[in-house]
Length: 103
Image 1 (cartoon, rainbow, N blue to C red):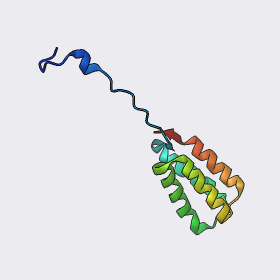
Image 2: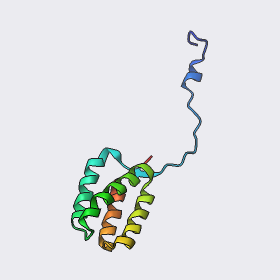
Image 3: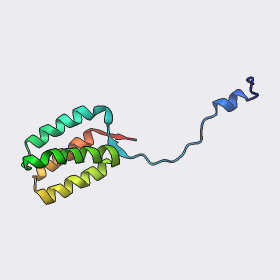
Image 4: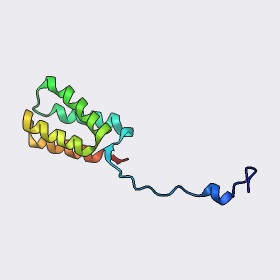
């Protein structure tokens, strides 16, 4: 026992496991690399130049703050609306898979 009267085993007891669901999110430790790869992919896309910066910022925000599935959904929406190619969308999906972290 320590000086406060608590048992050593009670101090070392672990918290009970809570079943929190983990979500696929953007790996923030690799954010600089993600942005560079995203710029490279978007430089070869057929999206209008003035819309690229807004698209990249929104995609980064959704992947880092909401979840990777929501970012994928946003890519699909923009592909249908804006009309960048399926190849670009496929590359963006692979990029998100590469920089995914569960938290």
